[in-house]
Length: 139
Image 1: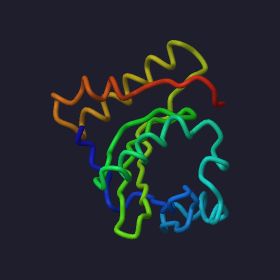
Image 2: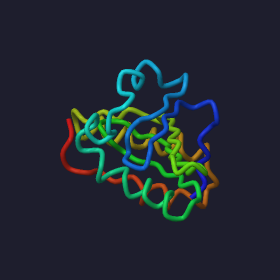
Image 3: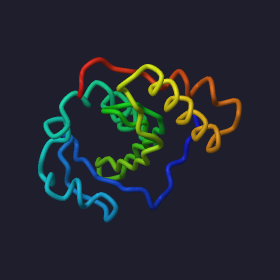
Image 4: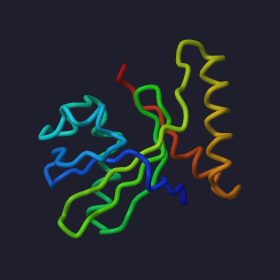
């Protein structure tokens, strides 16, 4: 799937133990206080949603881009392995889903897919729909 995350997007860098070791300017307000913390300890429930993609990037030594729903947000994420065995994570929030009612959820899902369509070729829509998974748990 080709959903390129812009280079000015917020980013953090993880070491091999998934500890946050660097924070980019666009992510300082949220992640600077978390420097030195393990990512999964800071965001309970996110490990099964994101770690398989991060592991794939590390294993293949190639960037992995994906769209994911977590904690009410749809985000485009890029996991970029570096030569020093660290992993750069870039993201862009595409949409915040309204999960209070089924009608609100349906409407905001449609809006999110429309936005994603603008950034991708029309042939990728089915792949994007497959990649949007709702994982039980979280708030």
